[in-house]
Length: 475
Image (cartoon, rainbow, N blue to C red; front, side):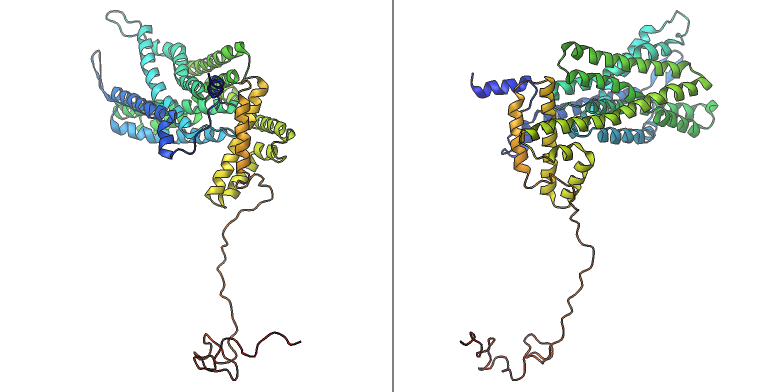
């Protein structure tokens, strides 16, 4: 076996990607990239799952003694716009939280789409089947009214959390080298949960619209719908993201440890914590009444959300210190500049460098962004070596990153401190005020060729642009 083959095999075992061949044409690189085909296949699966749910929700359901009409297109359209602000809020929040080593845009899209399409599809069918198994219907009697509550408390939390978290394990298998911080797990888990909540909200809002507009005892239908939108889209919108974050954190702990026991137990404990929180939420939403709901909300739910927020903010500072410490190792070896750890580890320095680069052209901006990503990858590569997550195969990748850093130095903004934006001047250029000519020229006063006293007219035999009396100084 050749040396190159052995090196590629070692990199593969450590999850380290190969250096891309940038000399190939862009269309060829896109078509040969496995992520392209993963995105195409999963997009088709997402579309099929959403269409299946749409067909199921809009179809009339025959029941004993009549038919339950399906949800119409108008209700789904209105519910889509009611649910959209909550989805946009979570997308912006989790994308901002995924700093320092953010995932590629395609991974964000696939994670969000999985929660919105596949996770809801699986949960819908599995929960429905489980509810039927739990129902107790005797001949000539109606179904047990507690069936829905039992399914919501004992079945739905485990099914839904497993469906939402499946995509996290898929990303970990395909790109575990890219998952390096707990914030990566929080962001991806939150996006999957936000997509799930988006589709679920559309279903709940649509059913509420259909019921409130067809039943006279609901009172003001529009007010009832807006109350539900505020309840699910604002007051309790944190539910699904908070639950699934537990699984994401457990997965990230497993990926960044050398212990085999922790690698097995951490994701399992995270999933069980997510299911437990989900079960508590559903049970209180089902049984708590009156003042008890407010007590649980303000005494339990909001403190949990505040704790999760504080933890995420603290992780930003933790990752900043980690990047600074790991890049300092390379500074001590003489391979990086002394300013690199401080500039790369601080969000404000990175942002200012990108702003300065943006005012100096697309080439400088692209080089600056590439330099920041290269140094960040180098820091987390060193951190993986220190923790024993990867072996000596990471040294070859470190050499590639150091050479890439050196090649970007001359063009990228590597130290933005003290630099200013290269903005175009906004002042209107003033015309130069030249004094008028002292003598009339051949074209009249102010002509192109001002003439002094005794000068020959333009075009005459005596005319010369150079005074014939001029010459070198005598002596």
